[in-house]
Structures are given as C-alpha cells and as structure tokens.
Length: 87
Image (cartoon, rainbow, N blue to C red; front, side, top):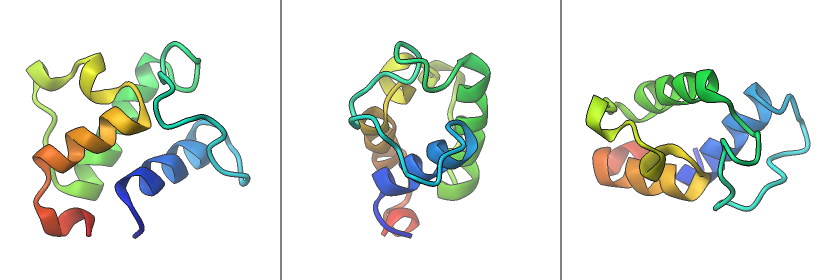
C-alpha cells in the first residue's frame, strides 16, 4: 500500500485533482486554503480514511487540526488506526 502519506496523495490526486501526475502540493498544504478540497470533499476524504484504515472519525475529531493537510491527516490516522492497517 505504501505509506499513509502516499495513499492520501494518490486518493486526492485521482478523486479531486483528476490527475495522473500525482499530488503537486507539499504535504503541509492546507486542503481548504489552497482549494485542493472543499468542505464536501472533506466528507469524502473522511469516508476514504474510514474504509481504508478501519477508523471512525468522531464528531469532536472532525477539526482542521486533524484533517486539513496530508501531514495532519496522516498523523491522525497513525494515532487512531491499528498499526497493521498502515504497514
């Protein structure tokens, strides 16, 4: 599967940027501020995370600090997902 970051970048490139050339932003770029994903896209991204890594994003965890960049989302996944889900 690759790293968590690679999986997030690939998903976003394919589903939101419609790009075969990969994810062109730094991992700390804000999805919302850079216009990479809108608020509805964040919902789709949460669904991807839930299905791919077997975690549930609780209402109180649905915050920018957890979900608004590749780096933040990867850190959040590593905190929540069982280790075998991302190795």
